[in-house]
Image 1 (cartoon, rainbow, N blue to C red):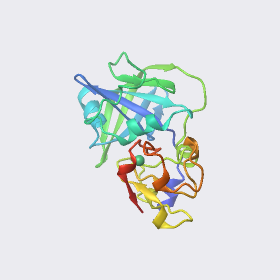
Image 2: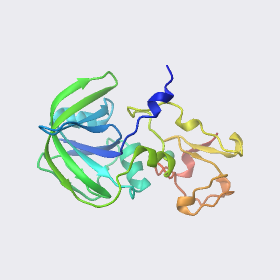
Image 3: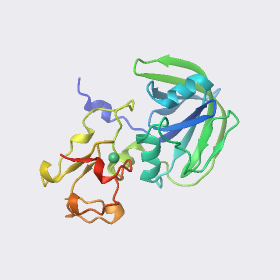
Image 4: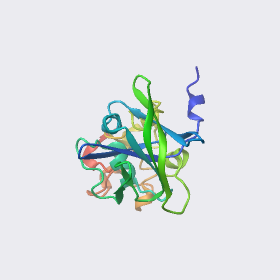
Length: 230
Ligand code: FE
């Protein structure tokens, strides 16, 4: 089987949120999609190890925020590469509590959908939750963020617990060779001096050692101390 065929599937990028008791949590998901029109239903695939999974099982509700292309790496890092058991992910973001009581991330969101779970399909590592959409709203204007845009334009990586993780993301190597590239041990992002970090004005040619001390991983926000020579 050529797993590259699976990589040609296209996706969007969303934040799926839920709650359990007083705890709010959310995570980045690329596997969210409408499943029927009448009634409108929506499905999300969530790793069983994730706190969001625990929340959806407990509350039987979830929200899906559709992110825009303007979404910053801070949002991706907080919701995609951190665990809600360690931090309050919502602290620095705009959100509201929906009619299902699930939190809804509004920062750089174009729209959201709230759903009540009607089916849970056990997929081994993940659960597929299918929900009845009970509320939906357009909250912003712009272009929805796609998985392709995230990878190609934003230089984003796929976390290991994602439904579509392929294992090859962190293995990229720049023209300077492995000795000058540094890999983020948190998310797998590779700093390659040949490309720099143009989104934060680090021009090509800047060695890892010469990056400012307060420079952080553009994908997950980890500090320089979390990088290892590749
Ligand atoms: Fe990182």
